[in-house]
Length: 156
Image (cartoon, rainbow, N blue to C red; front, side, top):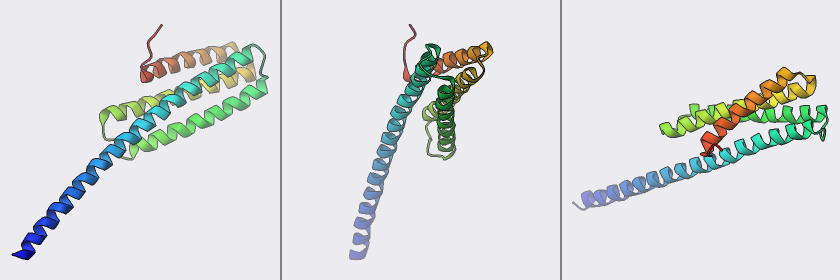
């Protein structure tokens, strides 16, 4: 009888520990996802303003074409890495909430638009072709639309 009672107490303690660990695990996952969201929001906003600032600097002849091309090559590489990381995260099974998955998919699309924006600015700095400038402007506007949606910014 004493063994059964000891086993019952042990079972209850193990069950409570497992439940508590599961709750902490879910809280930790939630905190990690919130942190990822905050960092991602800052990254897309800052990338957008960085590319735009460099474009402005180039248009006012503060930057030479080869410097703009170098900076945009770096931005393209960073956005490629971000897309790859977000795709791996999305495929990992860690994201199990449809709203979180939707957010990650929007981040992927936004990073691709930012990458395109940087590619077109680089092409414009290299060629001076107005079609590259038009493509840059289209990507810039599309990227801002996604960013303002993700960050909940109001249109003016």
